[in-house]
Picture 1 (cartoon, rainbow, N blue to C red):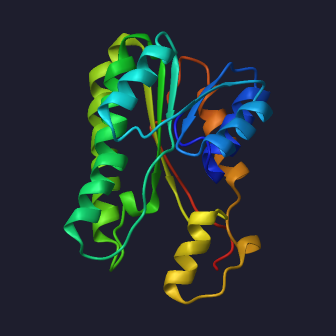
Picture 2 (picture 1 turned 135 degrees about the vertical axis):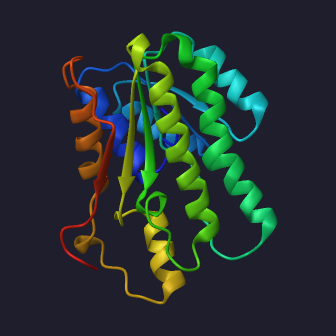
Length: 215
């Protein structure tokens, strides 16, 4: 899985390992990735930047033959800078598209951890939301292409979750950060594991999760 060195990715990796999965975890932060790998049953850890084709190709070579791919990597930003938009497009949209197709032959399940912004774009977040709307389109098209071959595709649209990214977002908004009022990374992990452990007669295609309490 990608993005495993972050809050939600970390939680999904550990939960999958507890469910009996053997994992390969990828992310940018080598130190944090090593910690996740140790807690995820001694998972294989591969550090790199998947927005770079050479890093994606290297990961695909190591991960050849995997049956489940969970995408949880990405960048968040606000504003109107076209260069920042290009970076987000590369990390949030092109990278998961590329890696999915590099590994597609062996995959039985693909999970795209998306955002609530992938369904409804908020003011000031247009660039990030565009990447998430695009990711939903990639998932929807892929599902129609691979279902007949037995591959399931899930989009998980995640609302505000208690992570370091969300803490930065609250700071941008000038609002007090109250993580206890938000979803927890383990909540998202529980949904992903539940979807992946459904009988093969069923497919969860899209799910939206949001905090029960409003921050």
